[in-house]
Length: 87
Ligand SMILES: [Zn+2]
Image 1 (cartoon, rainbow, N blue to C red):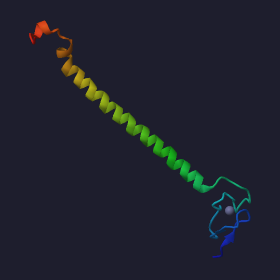
Image 2: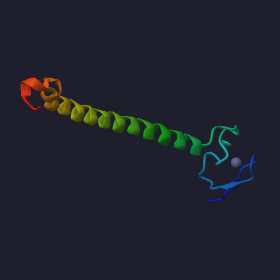
Image 3: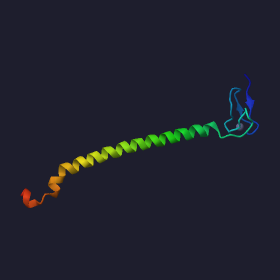
Image 4: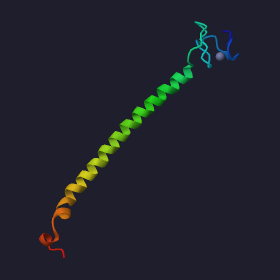
């Protein structure tokens, strides 16, 4: 196994590497987007969707709690005091 040097950024990569960190593709000799960026993007989008899912779930719980509170408190809140006799 011999290392190969990237002609673009002179960084040494292992012989098995298909693409340099800078994005230089050893197979095609073209500059592609770095694998690192691809992976970062994937992680970011996955995190965003997970965050959205979590927020959605959280919003639903809050909504449920508020709904329960409203249902429990509604009779007291909307019944005039003279009916309850709480003066
Ligand atoms: Zn490179």
